[in-house]
Image (cartoon, rainbow, N blue to C red; front, top):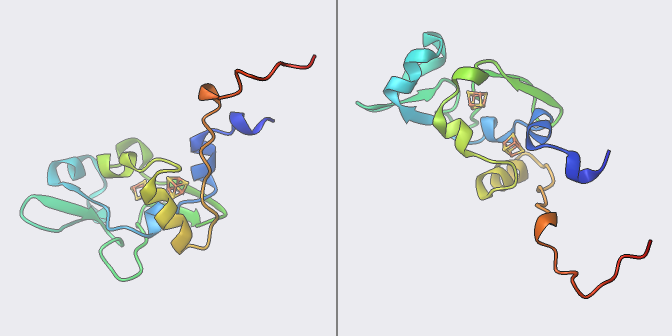
Length: 121
Ligand code: SF4
Ligand code: SF4
């Protein structure tokens, strides 16, 4: 397999650091689709995932071991906040660093600067 074929989803399935680093909050109505025991009120209009509003956060929906193999127990109804974090972005790198995981290097192979080089066949 070429490195460029490793999808972001695959990377996340062996990570999960962002699910155990941030307080995961969202507009309360998003929580209506989630199991009620996994959601707790935060303010009048915001809720958060249980387990994330504490000193060493870990979302209650996170299954598995961070940095090994993980999955989200409510993947299809996870909040927009969860979807916002992308492998390789600033939040991701912060969370991975906190869990002792190496940063993700984004290689933008589409915009190469090798016009001056000829392909040797
Ligand atoms: S920290 Fe980054 S790589 Fe890890 S699960 Fe979150 S988005 Fe994916
Ligand atoms: S709901 Fe799922 S994606 Fe969101 S923090 Fe929890 S385990 Fe991670």
